[in-house]
Amino acid sequence: MRLFELAHSKIKEIIKVGDCCIDATLGNGHDSLFLAQQISPPGRVFSFDIQESAIHEAGSKLDAAGLGEFVSIIHDCHTNIEEKVPIQYHGEIAIAMYNLGYLPGGNHSIKTTYETTTNSLLTTYELMKPSGLISVLCYRGHAGGAKELDEVEKLCSVQKWSFEKFEGSNNPTSPVLIVIRKS
Ligand SMILES: C[S@@+](CC[C@H](N)C(=O)[O-])C[C@H]1O[C@@H](n2cnc3c(N)ncnc32)[C@H](O)[C@@H]1O
Image (cartoon, rainbow, N blue to C red; front, top):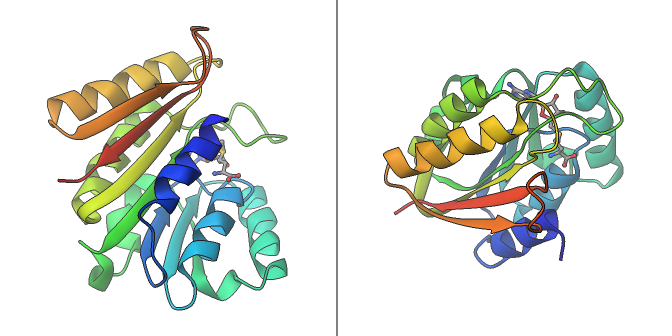
């Protein structure tokens, strides 16, 4: 099983119709579509991306699937999650997904950084409901990717968060999935 499938299967174990979720890295919209399929109606997904091309591509995908009305697409950095997710959802988020790195097929120089990722994770953790799950798929094969994974793991340890780590293979550049559960 590939790591994105493992993330989806961990999420499927706990997600329910009506849940509220965050997709912190919308990209081409595959994860937001997956989340919207699990929670609607009447749940909600708040999906963030800094790239206009991702916003358009994902929006079209969600509309074509008839699920656009359940997803709030937010063209902004995921460090602004607290301000952009309406206050009534704070403390109510069941699932948050981070799929780090760059947009496949897009500009590879526009990618997540360890600074914004860890900053955003700190905020997202506070918005989660107890027993909520955050999946963080880290790619070590690009410049900055290994450092980003290190910083995510360090954050989990320093914050004493409960988390599991899954490695795609023994290859030191293969992707790694971190699954955080809010206690
Ligand atoms: C690997 S892609 C995400 C794939 C996506 N989850 C999917 O299902 O197609 C990473 C995305 O993160 C976005 N990104 C990079 N930095 C960001 C930031 N600070 N805030 C929000 N999105 C960011 C990129 O523009 C890119 O689209």
